Amino acid sequence: ANGPQKRYSITLLPGDGIGPEVISVAKDVLKLTGSLEGIEFNFQEMPMGGSALDLVGVPLPDETLAAAKNSDAVLLGAIGGYKWDNNAKHLKPETGLLQIREGLKVFANLRPATVLPQLVEASTLKREVAEGVDVMVVRELTGGIYFGKPRGFRTDENGEEVGFNTEVYAAYEIDRIARVAFETARKRQGRLCSVDKANVLEASMLWRRRVTAIAEEYPDVELSHMYVDNAAMQLVRNPKQFDTIVTNNIFGDILSDEASMITGSIGMLPSASLGSSGPGLFEPIHGSAPDIAGQDKANPLATILSAAMLLKYGLEEEDAARRIENAVLDTLNKGLRTGDIYSTGTKLVGCKEMGEAVLRSVDSQV
Ligand code: ATP
Ligand code: MG
Image (tube, rainbow, N blue to C red; front, side, top):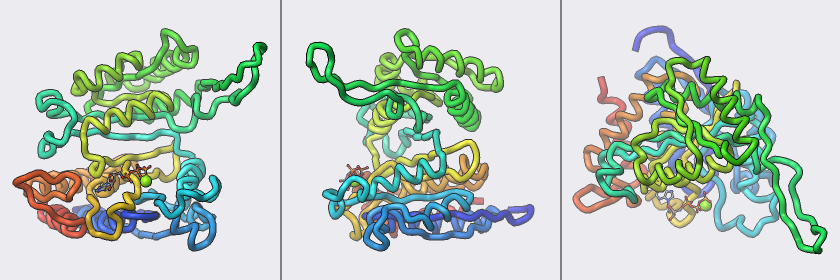
C-alpha cells in the first residue's frame, strides 16, 4: 500500500476457554493485514475474566480497563467457564464484560447475521430464503427497560406480589444510537429499518420521532419503520429485505439472537460495540466454549471477522477490513472447515490450520 505508515494501538483481551486460541490467530491476521496495508499495530495483551480472577482477584483489573481506554480499539476473545460458575455475582467473569462496556461507554451493539454462500446449508431456513442474507442489527445497549427506574417488587392493594420495570429513553440516547445506525447503513447498502412498538409504547413513539428527525442528516440513507412483532416475523419469512436494523435494548436483544440463528453458525459471527468517541469493543458472539478449549478445535473465523469489524467500524480502515473478509471467503472456498461448520466433502481442520490458511489468503490478494 502507498501513503504514510498509520499506527494504532490495540488492546487484546484473550479471556478464558477458547479465547486465547482465537485471539492468537486474529492477532496474526491483523498484523499481516496491517503490514500489507501500510498500518502498524501496537498490541497490548491484558488479563480479563476468569483468568484475571485467578490472577488478581477481580474480573476486570484497573490496569486492563486503563489500557483499553488508552487504545484505539479493543479485541476480546471470550469470558467465563465452568470453573467460576458457582462464584458470587461480583466475582463472576461475566461481570467484567458489563464493567468494560460501561467503562468504554459503548452504547451501540452491532451484530451482523450473514449467510455465506459456502455455508447456506447450515442455515435454519430453506436455501432460497437463506441465500444472500446479510442483515446488521444495531442494538441500543445501555438504556431502555433493562436499566429504567422505577423497578423492583412490591405488594399491591390485594396483597398480590408484583414485579415491575420501566422503559425509559431520553431523546439524546435515541439520537446517538440513530446516528451510529445511519453511519453503519451508509457503509453497507444504505437502507435502515427502525424497529419499535410505536403503536403501544410512549418510549417507542419518541424513538420513532427522533429517528425520523435524525434521518434528515442522512439523505443518502433510505429509512423505513416496522413494528417489532412484524419484524420478528419478517426476519424468518424474508430476511433478505433487511440491510441494517436499528432498535432498542430489549427488542435488539431478541432480534439479534433470532437473526444469528438464521445463519446457524455461531463460530462465524462477529460483533462490535461502539460509543460516540473512544475505542470500540470487538468480540465474537460465541462464548468461551469450555467443552473444546485447549484442543485446537475452535473456529477462529468469528474473531477474525471481529478484527475486520474493528478495522471497518473502529478505525475506518475499510480496505484492510475487506482484505480480511475476502481472505475468510477464500479460505471457505478452498473447502477448509472447523468441526462446527464441517459437512461431508469439506476438509476438517483445527483452529491453527484454519488461521494459517486465512493468513495465506490475506497475503495472496493483490
Ligand atoms: P455464553 O458463554 O455466551 O453464555 P454458552 O456457554 O452457552 O454461551 P458457547 O460457549 O458459545 O455457549 O458454546 C456453545 C456451543 O457452541 C458449545 O458446544 C461450543 O463448543 C460451541 N462453540 C462456540 N463457539 C465456538 C467456536 N468458535 N468454534 C467451535 N465451536 C464453538
Ligand atoms: Mg459460556
